[in-house]
Amino acid sequence: YSPLRKFSPLRKFSPLRLAKFAALLLLILLSSCSNYKKIAVKSAQLTQIEMDSFTAGKIGVAIVVDNPTSATIKIESAEAQLLLEERVFATLESLEATAFQPKGVSGATCWLRLKIVDAKALLKLGLDPSRWQSKGVTANYSLLLSNGSISKRFKENGLPIEQLYNRFAKREAPETR
Image (tube, rainbow, N blue to C red; front, top):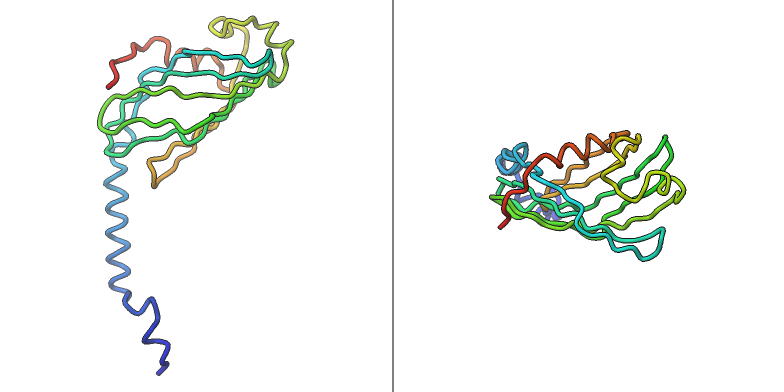
């Protein structure tokens, strides 16, 4: 017999209680994740470009998301590299978290810091991003989404910019609340 056993913080949690708690926690997590596969990006449009200099600035991207879950979804961080002929010519990084409301369609503007790494490549492409589709521009990106308790990172490398453009260009933006 140990006198410290009486004061042990785990004394109140028998193996049966711990198993019940773990099962309850798992049930809550699974029930809260059931609609996450139904989350859909309805549209994403470049809305604003604010250049601080020729090689740095901010970009605003208006994103409309259909979030049927009961949790607010956040873009915690986003990073991207734009490449021309396998060379990085620009990088993008999110400035702040962007949130989308639960149980419906909502929109928000995601602000990204733009840094031009290779100005010659940008001049070769032209300053109109909609014309980059046919010029072999690719993107590497990493996106961290969370609902406050669960986080998921999405990554893709070598994505042709035309595929990215086609994912959102043909969709009509629904009304936001």
